[in-house]
Each structure stands twice: as C-alpha cells, then as structure tokens.
Image (cartoon, rainbow, N blue to C red; front, side, top):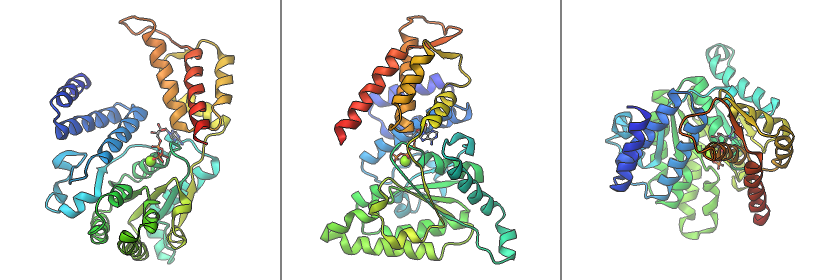
Length: 343
Ligand SMILES: Nc1ncnc2c1ncn2[C@@H]1O[C@H](COP(=O)(O)OP(=O)(O)OP(=O)(O)O)[C@@H](O)[C@H]1O
Ligand SMILES: [Mg+2]
C-alpha cells in the first residue's frame, strides 16, 4: 500500500472512529517509513501511537494486528501486558551519545555476539541493561538500536500501563512473558521501569507490587543467558537498590552538549537539500538549545523546516529549502520558557 493510500485510510478510520483499523494503518505507516529509511519519522510516530494507546484501556489491544501476534492470541494475560512486538533496523549510528556510552553499548552487543566463546571460559555475557536519563534523550531509541543490531524481535512492555491498570495477574503474566521471550530468543524491553517503585505509598496495592518486584528479581536471577532484558526509566531514584544491582550495565542517556546538538541537526537534515538562511544565527540557536532534549530540538527543527517550506506557498518542492532561523528561534524560545516555568 502506498503512503498516500495509508494516509487516506487513516483519515477514513479516524472519522469513522474505528480505532483498531486506525492503529493498524498507523502501524503500517511506521513500517513503511522504516522501510523507506525515514527513521526519525517512524520512531516519532511510533511513540505518538504508544502514548495514544497508553491513554486507552489496555484491553488486549495489539499494535501490530493479528498476524504478528499469532502465537499470543489465545493467551489473553500476556496480550494484556504487551504493547508492542517489533523488529527494528536501527543501528548504533542512529544514536547520538557520548563516546563512553557508545563504547559501553557496543561492548554489550559484542558480548552477546560472542556468547558461545565466552561460555567456553565460563564467562557469562552481559544480558541486562538499564537505560536512564531525562525524557527525549534516546532510551527508547537505544532499545531499538539493540534490537536492530542483534536482529531480534523485541517485546515492549509498559510497566506504567500495568501499574495504572490492574496489578492482580501481573506477576504470573510477567513470568509467562519471560518464558516466551526466552523460547523465541526475543528481547524484552521494560519501559517506565520506575513504575515498580511508585505504588509503594499506596497501601492497597503495596503487597501486590512487592510481589511483582520479587517476581522480577527472580526472573532476572534465573534469566537464560541468551535472553536480553532492557529496562528504561527517567526516574532512577524511584527504583529499588536491589533491582538496580541486578543489571550488568547501567547507561545514562543525557541531554545533548553542543557537539551532540550539531550532530543531531546535521543528521536530521541529511539527505535533504536544506540550508539555514543565516548560519551565524543557526549557531546562536544551537547554543540556546543546551539544556533541551534531543527530541525537543529535533521536533522544533522539523517544525521550522515544514513552516519555512509551507510559507513559500508552492506546490512543487523547490531544489533548495532554506530554513527560516527566526521561526526556529521562536520555537526554541517557547520551549525554553516552558522548561523554565516547570521549575
Ligand atoms: N540520543 C539520541 N540520538 C538521536 N536522536 C535522538 C536521541 N534521543 C532522542 N532522539 C530523537 O528523539 C526521539 C524520541 O526519543 P526517545 O523516545 O528515545 O526518548 P526517551 O528517552 O525514550 O524519552 P521518554 O523518557 O519520554 O520515553 C527519537 O525518536 C529520536 O528521533
Ligand atoms: Mg521512551
């Protein structure tokens, strides 16, 4: 199906309020964008879908339609836990980070790759990684990179969604999920891992939550060597010490510095005939971006790009697109104001 047909279907299903078909088509568009290498768009759309679904009741809804969930169909409990089951073709080069973080991630991947050789020496390969740091700095992206580099399927479990829905069957369902992932050699991505700590204050769910944490501790302790678990959080201080200790690797994905912002701008605009109307001003904006997340910087840049293009009021794509730095600047100013008002 072409991109235009997908967009027409998306419009149709949203007006008809047909959520299942809508989600199906949106996911087709994510897949299509991945195949056509519009990586950033694909990952951003996917996170919009994820957030949308999060707000609805989980009710066993799957992101990837029935065919990709075939094995899981009869298993309602697991279905309720799973938000996505996906494949990825992201590579390490898609993630901008410090040299140190890249090196750690690349050793993690190498250990898994050389698992048999390490085993002959009784050296266990690292298989549990905790990603932490502020929102929009690449935790989800890093999980896609691991899945892409390892060429494995990945189950994405949103622990926040579980905690805010019913806790009752969670321990049992998590055990089932871990078993299935290890049978399939899939990766498990536990997003919003801090949710495990959040219920501490609510007496009513306390016992159940404790059980979930204990289950996870056990699952981690008996995790088969080939099963990789990734957990992500932007509130690492909410997580129990005992849980943190179980990870082989904890990686902080932080706000970008000036060089990383430059790299992000370059990567975001690559393959397009795009320049800034004023390079000095663009550099000044880059300086202002320090303190904002990768996501916000990229999002404002893409918005400025679209607006600069639309302001030309032409139907045919010009040979060269010039980003109006005044537009980008005002979007960034707004973000800085928003950030300051949060403090
Ligand atoms: N380190 C990075 N390198 C390149 N692009 C990035 C990076 N971090 C974020 N981005 C861009 O921002 C988008 C959103 O990032 P991502 O979803 O990975 O953030 P996150 O840390 O998981 O945030 P949250 O805590 O809100 O879930 C990515 O799809 C990507 O386009
Ligand atoms: Mg995320």
